[in-house]
Length: 228
Ligand code: ADP
Ligand code: 5GP
Image (cartoon, rainbow, N blue to C red; front, side, top):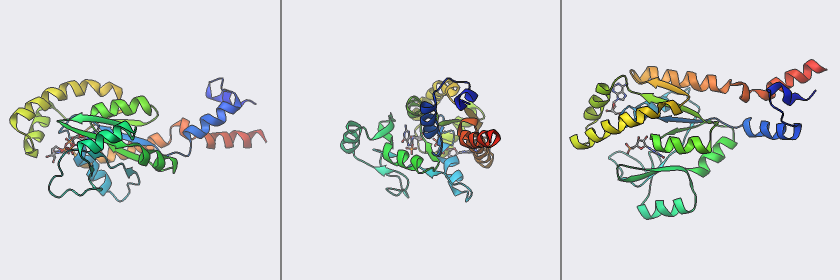
């Protein structure tokens, strides 16, 4: 029997093997994104504080100033503009974006190597970067973190206390545009409670591991057994 037929495609067996190798045994690339101030950083920290979380966090590179309490190589890899631009030239990023005057980017080597080893990798990035990842890794899992309302978003930006009124107004304007990008994502999680948002993210990841395309090898073994 040509097993590829069960997938509803006409892949020959050689290509089919390659298809299996491409999709199986690799970790899942998980992308959490959403408007500024929605709580991405807060939810990400809570996800990684949970001892049950076994994804690897991809530490981004940025040119922004280190904030109090941040550690180089833990929160970000802090780079100068020149260093960052040299890395862009060397094609060292899966994605990068300029955000409020600074560069932010996801280093490609860590993500590739970690996925190859079979670990899930978690990115927490803004929406322009997520769009770029979608072009390069369409098989990744895209989760959009949405605010319960624009009023909540505004309150959170004010409450965080890191931005001037002018920047907050700009971010709210941008958020409207960013919310329209929601339809590029696989799942939407409303961040009304941080604990609930974390629980939902874990459920989504668990379900994504059970996608048929990811359990093909098990399915194939079952069919071979049934044939014998
Ligand atoms: P982002 O990383 O998306 O820009 P932050 O994680 O910095 O957002 O969160 C923005 C502000 O909102 C912070 O002050 C944070 O404490 C607060 N916040 C995040 N999630 C919630 C939530 N579920 N309920 C109330 N406040 C929240
Ligand atoms: P902050 O300066 O508050 O740490 O982050 C600002 C924004 O940059 C947040 O929305 C955060 O999710 C995003 N960000 C962090 N790392 C990356 C990255 O590697 N790439 C992109 N595109 N955005 C990032």
